[in-house]
Image (cartoon, rainbow, N blue to C red):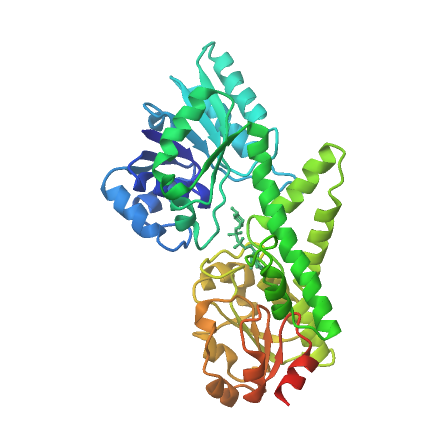
Length: 447
Ligand code: UDX
């Protein structure tokens, strides 16, 4: 089977590479000529574990092609995926202009039956608009051609996207004809081994599933962050509470980690867009308003703890920020809580030294000359008044605390992800702050 994927961003590229990996003939199309040339030379625009190898292998085998020319890509294809960006508009709703432009172009260029699939995250009702855009283009050509529109949202986690694609928890497909259903069933057959299910449903439900899933995950995080903050005040330890509640299978143990707020390209955008969809239908999603508000607050939690520790004065004090990307195993800086923390520190006159194992280049585009980009985690911490653990990369998990103690100005750690053993650190002479941990509890424990 041959498929065309329009948009070589994160979603389009991973989809194209993984479909090619199981033998599908894939042509990836993008308007950005520079990006296409770089991809042809195996230079990827994003860091994603395992992706580069897959792209390279399938390019070499001629199963994965990159081009700017949609017209030459379409002949012989059975499916076209639209995987272009849906950036948030001013009111938070998803901006569909790129999706609809591509739909219009497909209508201008198609010569035979196609299943036109939205892969981008798009609000309920978008398939209707895609259908209209395709039809208008066909009408302008005075051409009657059969085609179907479908919705196939992705559930890829950055940093684990290849694995998520190859071994999906489920594949959600919204269709309204058996022909489209049959085509997409064929396409995804190689991924359904070992019981991974494909869930066919109507198109509106598929579109809604994506937002409902991300908004629920975001809700879990804000809920845990809210409870963590209360734990900190009330003398409880959120990590013990987390284990206590996560053992209930109705709650489950995943995705319950408190931290410094969710970031990334999906949760903040999708929560806003779903709130906006609610508004359009005259429905107020009150829970999601709270999820957002808690998250905005949580991004400032570490900074507030720092200010409190230093009695409101951090001027000319050096802080070592460990981790910059919004989560580990990605260089993605979109909506990264590290940026909020660093801005607040700089505004108060602090000196900031940062280190991230992968995201330094991406981060320098956001942070410019305002911070020092350190060679490694230890040089970031030299003469620092505190280490601020922001992103839980593996490399930060077992630092040489004795060495740090000697080189830091003061042995102080603010752990934004609760990855360190507070009791051990205190025994080593550090002052430790985590999320949702009352320091009095720790002190009592080590007496
Ligand atoms: C998310 C969804 O998981 C994925 O299914 C969807 O397709 C895209 O959005 P992603 O943005 O890659 O994926 O990141 P994810 O691993 O879900 O984490 C999102 C944010 O939540 C990160 O900032 C992370 O640090 C935070 N998080 C996650 C927590 O604070 N606690 C947790 O327990 C889990």
